[in-house]
Image (tube, rainbow, N blue to C red):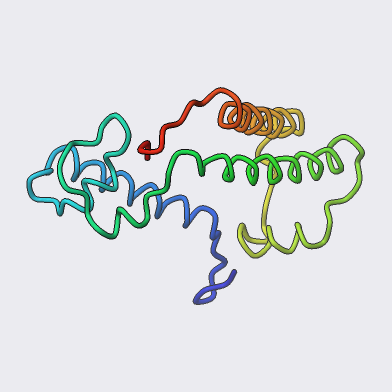
Length: 151
């Protein structure tokens, strides 16, 4: 993507923005908690780290039961499977990447890309991500015991 005559890498910009937001939010919540709005504290503190007290109305609406996380892992397995098949096609079978993948990478990561990892490492990483997604889906469906009040 071009901006003011320069090619931007949207993936790195997104990662940088998320890193800054989470780091600053964590610093504010951990070290300046008394000066931070309670809504921000509630966003960062969940599960075992949550403190008692009245929950914000908006956060009550946005917070979902733990049972709903299995839908996330179903999507994660489908997504990881797609990427595993694409990586296998390119790295194991030696076929070119589909045009839509190349176009998406050109848009998000600039057209001036150079390989930064070996193909074995990419296959290993995508395989491990797929296995982790499958494991978490199995845990959500078969191991996790939920109660109606768990959020």
